[in-house]
Image (cartoon, rainbow, N blue to C red; front, side, top):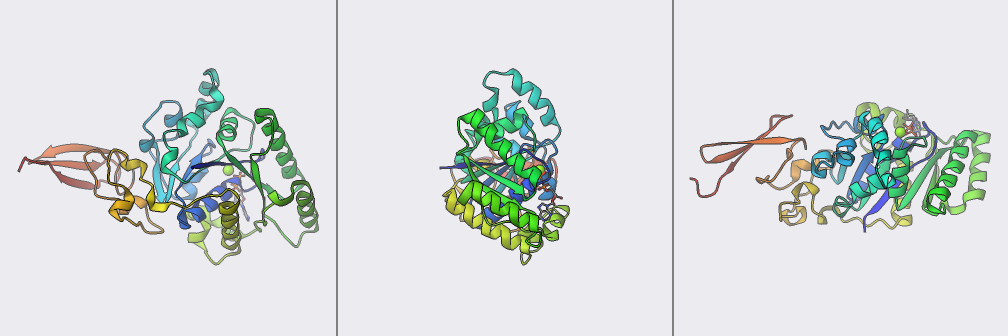
Amino acid sequence: MTRIVTVANLKGGIGKTTTVINIGAGLALRGVKVLMIDTDPQGNLSSSLGVTAKHTLYELMIEGMDPARCIVAARHNLDLIVADTTLLTAQTMMSRGAEWGRTIERALEPIAQYYDMILLDSSGSLNPLNANALVAAHDIIAPTTVEPFSVRGLELLHQQMRTMRGDANSIKLIVPTMYDPRSRQALELLENLRQTYGSKITQPIRTNVRLSESPMYGKSIFEYDPESRGAEDYRVLVDRIMESLEIVATGNARPSIHQRNNPTSVAESGAQGDQNGSSFMSRPAPTYDLQVCPRCGRDVRYTSAAGYRIMICNSCNYTKQILIRNVR
Ligand SMILES: Nc1ncnc2c1ncn2[C@@H]1O[C@H](COP(=O)(O)OP(=O)(O)O)[C@@H](O)[C@H]1O
Ligand SMILES: [Mg+2]
């Protein structure tokens, strides 16, 4: 079963996006097929992973666009749906419709089968998008800095879950972030958190400058500095998540959403994909049905000449000639 996991805390600047990027990247390296979705109009996920995309969550949710057109490959086993400020308009439009609280959940239904885990990043406020991201989740991971205000944000998140769902049981893990073991206040608050929330509290993510630098280079911590403390801490967290949320890594055994009209699965084709590059690089040869570029993942157009159909990428100018059967 695909786990839908939302990373949330009703406070900004406490390491939610950093956690999404690095657990997403870490799980993908462990062979888990991950789709990350940015539900924050600030749209930091794409730039933090050095990815650009033509279509966003707005088009998927509000315009009902084909999911394959909204999903871009960020890394091997790691796809992404980006966000931008259009999501601010989406909030007003969503709240006019019946069942508005399930807009994201419904949009994910046809996509889920292609992934082991769907990981949603959220913003730190009480708004319709966040409510949607919380409703859609099987599990919630709540990062919190070890400071009085963010611990309060955590309490509010528990309250909100009780109001929305009757209990806060879906908050499965609480991740202390930007932890400084030399600070007495941090040590005491961590101890309080452990007393209040017990085994839900994971091993903390320590403050590490490499974690704050890596988004500027469009890299996860495992790419930017795999020997850093940040990488070490997120590796431990990835293992804890796999164990606690019972995430199963199927890797290439699941077909790619971009090949859903093509019966040849990635596993059958033996495609492997390189760890740092785009998984599109190693997917099977394109067919007529392919609507996205196998190199950059963006829209393509087709033209015909001399018995060939020619696929041309609108963005990176990749071209591929496909012989039309029985013509030559
Ligand atoms: N463990 C950490 N050590 C140092 N800096 C961190 C750490 N975690 C996050 N940051 C930095 O803190 C800032 C806020 O983090 P971010 O993940 O964007 O928070 P949120 O998504 O909750 O708003 C960013 O500049 C980020 O690089
Ligand atoms: Mg964020």
